[in-house]
Length: 319
Image 1: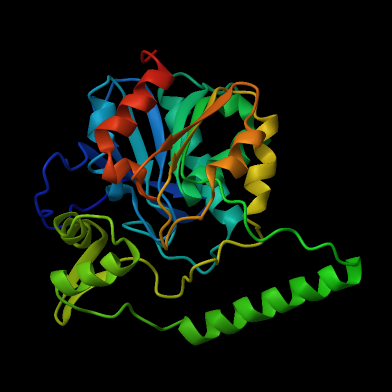
Image 2: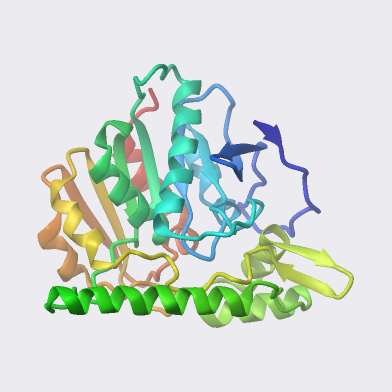
């Protein structure tokens, strides 16, 4: 474990706070940047960001959870934020990186030699889907799980012959390799803080422009020709494979831990477009779903206190 070099100060936004601690973990050879809010000796709560986001998108939400007595631990997924860029980006690689963080955090609260301390976990969008899969595979790691608008259901699995499935896989791999060759030396397009905020605003039209400007200063870096997002330019939307969105929905019913789904009723470009009526029949035995009216995909940024109150009530007193 080592410390991350602090970047320039972030632009102010009401209620947003810089993490109290930042450090690096070695996740099987990839450097993962970790950010923490709250007291260092408080019980840990893991927070997992979405695709093309980064841990500092929790600057508004995490302090509210920390005020409830938790040590909120979030990390930048590989290729995002302050974490290392990698040769490989895949759903399984993100899962392995997550396990490295779980092992580290569980070790700080007494987990040793294969005995894991179950942790409360909250994930947004892709982070929620990742954690749903991990909770299904290794439920002993989870005290409870909150999934914030990370329950996709589209792209139904095609009912096709096995030889056609093999052809689909071959086409997907060839497309991915072609993309990697084209983008190996690319850089993100530079611009001013306002220009990068405007680009992000086209995908996040419901978020305040001052929040988007702050995101540039927490998820970007300044060079001689302007600001650039830190996200690896070789990454592309939908590049999480091999993975299909509907797999998350099908895993929900078998989750054995307490589960809370929080969905925004307003559909927008970066969201999954999941109508609540598609999710409710799949709730696990110990699960429930809250649907927030007039809220979009970024539920924890549009309504940070409301969502934090739901999460704090669901997790109960830190222990």
